[in-house]
Each structure stands twice: as structure tokens, then as C-alpha cells.
Length: 268
Length: 232
Image (cartoon, rainbow over all chains, first blue to last red; front, side, top):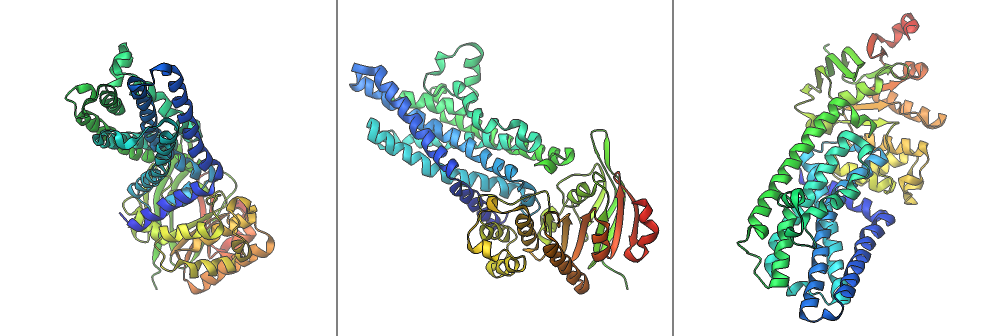
């Protein structure tokens, strides 16, 4: 692996993002305005209960919204950068450089991480100003689940990238909607027990659902995040995230080879 | 004197669904020559180039570039080759210099600005470079010249040109052809040149390969060209 190439491609993706005003505005404005809608709606619903219990619910909704954005941004920014090269017909120019698959993937992940580190703190600032939500008052062990959110989001992003390699513009919609498809099963705003039947079963396979269960334990029940309860177990979540991440890498390599055999890269 | 083989293709076959696009391709390209690939639209020229670069995986056959197996050594081979294709573009949100700097970094070029300045001046893009024009604002001819700059950024040992003069005006076309002739004279670079323009290929190539329906009809020296024109 060549650090110089990884650095070059990481900066390439960051500058391409920076130079596209539309993308910057969308990346920042969309989550900020979404936060405002969720936060103010919750504030309205809890109404007179804005004492201890009410403000706990408001903190829960705001924090879960922000942490969900880590997952969706990790997925969207990983997969949308790749699509830019397809739109420009620049992908093959990159593929005939000495870049290896591992370097390419790492650059996608690093550039998405940098963007997340720019956008998420902005959301925390807005949540502090608008809803008096202070991240630093949360139990610091929440960090354990943040890593899970990031790894899971990246797994989704790499998976979408792989599908785009193989299927091209037919999966144009996936980077935008995939996180929305997963969201109901991640139990972001409600406990896992709210779901029933097959949905309930599926939620146990979604790593972020453990983190959001833990958030509810901490904020509503004042419990520790290191809960022995399986529903919030960080080890199970982490194991699942790692499994999905490794699978997404395997899936990417598989579909890249398949795309070369089928000749679909010619058209990208 | 034995000439060094830089591209060696044995029994290459490729089929997309039921259509055979490369049919038992065998060829050798020698160091320093300008090897022309001539054929009508849909004959398999671009697919052959993309297969030689590893973008398309053949169904069977073997490819060796600079003495190395392509499948096992693609990263090392890619360090020494490059491509200018009329069918691609660079990142549209970047200006000329940023695009070339990116590729210079990917090829590990030390002190890239000197090389970039030379290339940009040679291909008449220096004024646009100073204006910081984004690639999206360049004309198709200017984009083609930018791609040629990119293709030469790493001083490749083998340069693949896939209809590089599409969108170029006659003056710039002649400039590119003269550059190729200079490389041919110095034997400083091997060029694999794909075109459907017979006159152009006759002028600049040392040998020409006729391809039709994915099959090589004949490979001949330019001086023996007259006998095989009918095939094309």
C-alpha cells in the first residue's frame, strides 16, 4: 500500500466535494434543517412535560438523530464520491493508475470521515443552541457505539459502491435511499420492542440498533451504557459491524472482478 | 538485432453475452515502435485497448506488458503505461492544474509542477490554466488536450492512444502527430495508436494491425500497406 496514493486520492475527493457548491450546501443544510424539524416537532409534542422527563425525551431524539446522521453520512459520502467519477467518465482514468483496490477504498473512507468530522460537530452546535442539548453531558462510554455507527455506515457505502461498479447507473438511487431503508430496523427513535414479527427479528441484525437501545437506557433510565442486556450489548454490535465491513470488502472485490469480466467498466 | 517485446498477446478471446468482441488475438509490439490499430467502428479496437490495460478481463488468453503478466502485476504495469481516450474526461469540478496534480501524485511524480507546466504549454492550455478554468468549462478539444497532458504525466514506457485526435482542430492534430513522430524517431516511447483514419495511421505508425469484427486480419509494416488496403 502506498500512503502517497491514498493521500492523493483522499484530497482529490475532498477537493471535488469542496468545489461543488451544490453538494456542500446539501451536505450541510439538509441535516441541519432536518435536525430543526425533528427537534421542534419533539418539543411541540412533549409540550408541558418539558421538565425533567420531557427534556430527556428531547435529548434522546436530538442525540439519536445526530448519531443516525453519522451512519447515513458515512454511507452516502463513501458511495456518492465514487459516482462523481462515473458521471465525469473519469473512473477508467483512475483505474489505469497504479492505485490498488485497498488504496481506493481507504481514500473513500478517509475522505468520508473528514466530511463527517466537519458536519457532525456543526449539528452538535445547532442542537446546543436550539435545544440545549449538550453532548458532553452524555455518558462518555457512548464513544463505543460511535465507532460501530461509522463502521456500519462504511459497510453500506462500500456495498453500494460495489453494486454501482457492476450495475452502473441502474442503481443511481441507492446512495440516497439505502440508509432510509435500513433506518426502521435500526430502532433509532423507538425501542426494539416496538417492532413486531419479522421486523423485530431483523433489528437484531442491525448493529446501530444496539447503540440506540443503549442511548435510551442512558438518557431515559440513567443506566450505564455497559449494559449486560443483550439488546444494548456493544460487543455484539461491534462483532456484527466488523462482519458486515469485512463482507462489504469481499463483496466489492467480487463485483469488481465481475465488472471486469462483464465489461461494465467500459461504460462507466 | 533482437527487438524487445513490450506487449505480447496470446490467443486472446472475449465475448460479451453472445457477441464475440475479440477473437483469438495474437500480437507482439516492440519497444519504440508506433503500433497502429485500424478498424471500422465496432471492430474491437477500444475493447482491445481496455483489455490490455486491465479494465476488461479476457475470457481466455494471456497478456504480458513489459515482460510481466498483466493479471498478477497490474499495479506495477500501470506505473509505466498511460492512456488518452476520446471517450473519457477528467474531474469536471477541478481546474486544469489540480487535475494534473492529482494524477501526478497518483503516479508518484516528484516535482510535478515542472512537468505540468511543460505539458500545459506544449498543448496550448497555459492561458486556460492561469484562468483557473474548471474542466466543465473546457471545450471538447481542450478536454482532449488535457487528457493528452494526463497521458504523458508519468513519461510512460507505453502510451495507449484511443482516437486521441477526435475533437482536435487540424493544427493541434498535426502537433500531436509530430510529437508522436518525435517519440518514434527517438524510440523513447512505445505507442499503441487506435484509429479508424487510414491516412493518419499511415503517416505516423511503423506497423499497422487491421482488425474487423474482433479478429485481426493482418499486421503489416506501413510500407507494405498497399497490398492490404482492400481488407479494410
